[in-house]
Length: 273
Image 1 (tube, rainbow, N blue to C red):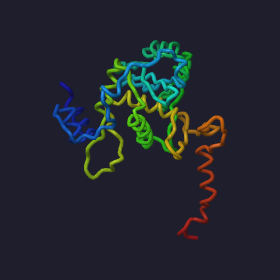
Image 2: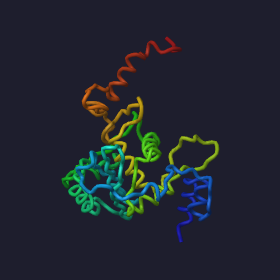
Image 3: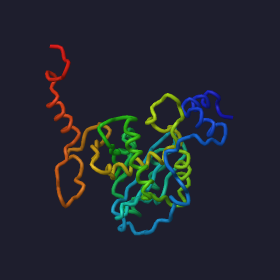
Image 4: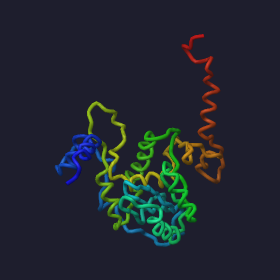
C-alpha cells in the first residue's frame, strides 16, 4: 500500500539492482555492499563490563525526525579494537526528549566522554548540552564539506572491519540489519567512488560520527579535522599521534594559507597580464 510516487523516487535513488532487491524482493548478486558483514564473525559479547577497561567511550548520534533517531554506544579498548555495546533506534518523529533517557543512562553507566552528533543538526546537540550531556558536532576528515566527506569516513570504518577490529553486541539487531544491506547503487557510466544509497543507514552514520571523530587515517595520511557546524578548523590542530612526543600539526586554515602564499595570483602559469 506504499505511495506509487514514493516508490518511484526510491527506484531512482537505489538504481536498478538495489531496487530489484529492496522493492521487488528479488535475490540479486550484483549489488556492491559497503561492509563485508558476517553475523557469526562480527557480532560478539562485550568482553568487559567495567568502563575503565576502555580508553574511549563515546556515542555516535544521528538525530532524525522524518527518519529514525539512531545512536550507537561505541567503546575502544587498549588494543585499538572497537566494540558497539548498545544501540538506540527510535521511530520517525522522535525528538531529543525521547532519546534523552537512554543517552543519559549510557553516559552514567559507561562514563561517556562525548556524544558525537551530526553536525548538520546543531539544534539537537545544543539541546542535549542544555540537558547536561556532553554532546558535540562530529569531526570530519579532510578539508571538504557536505557529501564529499562520506566516503573518506566510510573508508576508515571499512578498514577497521577488514582488520577484525570492530565487534557488535549480539542484541544490536538494527545495526546488524543495516550493515548487511548498506550498499552502493549500481549505475553504469558513473563514478565508482560515489556514496552508498542514502537509505537504512542511520546506525552506519552513527559509526562514522563516533569512530571518525576519534580515529585517524593510517600511515602518513593524517586527517585535517574541522569541528562544528560553522566548519571552522580546531584551534590547536590535530592532537599528536604519540602524546609523549608533542609535535605541532597545522590546522586546515594554516595549510590553506601556506598554499595561497606559495601560489600567488601573479605567479599562476598561463595567467594573462
